[in-house]
Image (cartoon, rainbow, N blue to C red; front, side):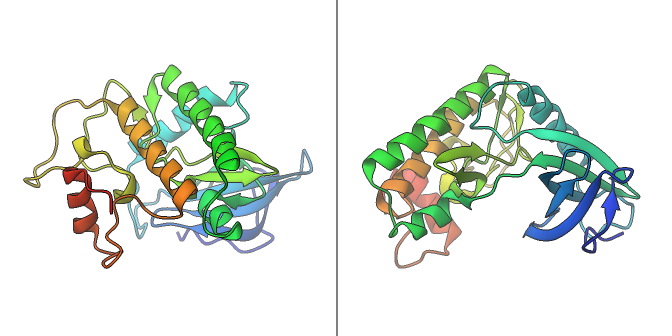
Length: 244
């Protein structure tokens, strides 16, 4: 079964109606839908768990995303996107999220001239730090903090996407996250998988600092301006502590 669902399709025992696609990744498609019981817009993350899925998504990772998002849903923190429900539609697993209408931080930066004024960046970064503190207090790390995973709506920042989240005590995976925001201890020089536990809190802090740098300057801290798409060069700059 494909993760593509036609507009007007109703899922979740008639509760949620698909309205339009709003994002597409390697393992899921996100749709804007409506909760017909509450007359409320929602974001529906659709994952194919069938045996013939084009991309096999580890169910353990999906279960972790649901587990950690559920733990956060009862926390009074407006900087975190809430998971509202989980439903099945055939072989499709659908995570029903709070719908945040706005721009992600990267688009917000571009809409505001390529970088943000210090007072604006300070306000948004304060909200990001509050969200990260709440996550860490619940015993897990986000592992993919970046501008694309934070939405700005009416001046408020909401952190989204817990697909790579993991327990602070079991974070041992090498090279997890988006290269531009990865801390040095996540990068293996010999290409071998990392087996020792790293400071996952510190890695989230590093990523958030990279995000702040982009908000203030409009530039990626470790990208080589002459080779912006060269991931190996970016990772080497991170390892060497070389600001591009």
